[in-house]
Length: 304
Image 1 (cartoon, helix red, strand yellow):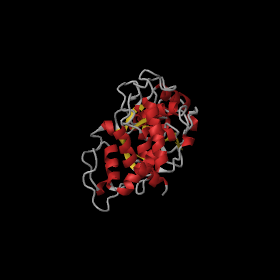
Image 2 (cartoon, one colour; image 1 turned 180 degrees about the vertical axis):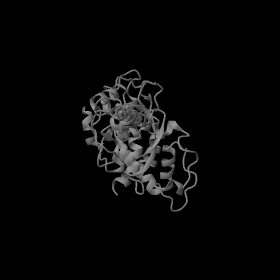
Image 3 (cartoon, helix red, strand yellow; image 1 turned 90 degrees about the vertical axis):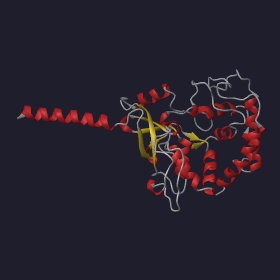
Image 4 (cartoon, helix red, strand yellow; image 1 turned 60 degrees about the vertical axis):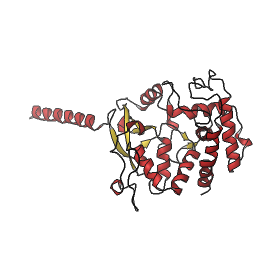
């Protein structure tokens, strides 16, 4: 009888291990999760990038469906009838099936106990978190890049994340933090603000572009530039609550970026300006387009 019970216990244990292995998402898989299930891997975002997007969505509601579809790897929205609801995917259609464009999708790493850690998409998903009609319970599709669930403890897990350059351990003032200081959720109430991160974002295409070096982690690009700019520019000299002052701040950031020699190292990033996509001259047309087409949304959304 005891032998019989022992065999049953062994069988149940084997089945349990197989079920666990089967249920744990593996690299390359595409899975759907609620935004509230995703643990950030950085403590700060650029709030004004979120405000810009929220302003655009408030003026053109259909664009939030484009954002939803594109982020799910579906290429954009197709048909969005009146009454379409992000929480009811069958109430509208996207151009392609989920995961058709995996490079457009946001990424996660599986940690201990199956916790999902977001490694790319903090701004996009925080925007949807704050967007009316979306929110923390909105389900999105994400792409799994790594399975670190076999880490014996969180200390080991975070060490692996650091080694893989999948975590940003600085606050909004550029000070070092520990993984334990990273908030558990996305959105304005949980994450902190890094103003330089936003200003660098708005100078994109005017003073820098996409890096050609595969050594640069794209998710941290604006943080690298922002960390250096924090030592170069005093934002107290600008009224960031007014459109004119905000434009002046973006202009100052962009001009300082292009003044850096291509082979000069950008702050403590370990990368040169050229490696980080830095331009050697300012594209004033792009800068003026940003002033006209983006900054007004930031100021308007912030004041709502």
